[in-house]
Length: 312
Ligand SMILES: [Zn+2]
Image (cartoon, rainbow, N blue to C red; front, side, top):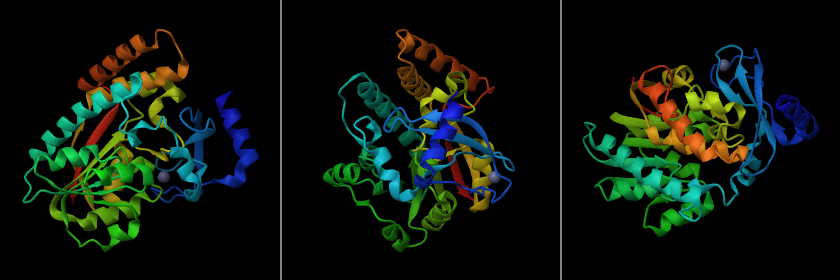
């Protein structure tokens, strides 16, 4: 049903969307198979197709809005990673989880053998992570193309770049740490960007990604209503295989990975919201817990995983 709707939607509005004919990861022209249609519940109400590359298995949103049109899909009060609001239950949960996650991330950063504490956070949003890193003695810079969140970050006295040219001008090896928290899946030209970050990272530096994992238990349970599909904002849906291939193609290797246990609850609560189920909140707790247990036992990936890359 959803698949048919998504198909008709694109037949009617095809001119507004970019259809990728070649896989952005393996460059194959074999085409894509449709997995399912996925509605953008958060902002536009439009449906998008989640597809899989027939050659390498990379999962992506295709067709997708042209880069020039993507801004409108981020313009929502509901897009809370771009605000510091704590109004409403979900925003409160989000801020609580964010605090806890900040601590986990910082503890990990502090445990790494680095020579200096120069850090670049790409897609820094309102700068919550940068602020926390700064108060832990890191010298921080941020990059945020969104005007409103970038402004909030700048008001905190953070140095935040907004244009790509500013990144290109930075000296090679400037940073010991580069972090992208739930960002890579939003970046249309992710391979060239990973190459750029490879250049900006020092030889002994670490490159952090946090990604939603669509092979997790909670993703399987909620199917196309899993909140972390987040189409069309999420253009790519990485898994371990596609991440390894991306790393290999850009001069990196995976050094370590770990899961963030709170994300399964957060994503499950959001996914239940889409179903407007009275018992949804309780079920989300159960699904989030089960997802984490499956991850601990190694049967499934975590709902979100942090990958730490080093230069190969
Ligand atoms: Zn491919």
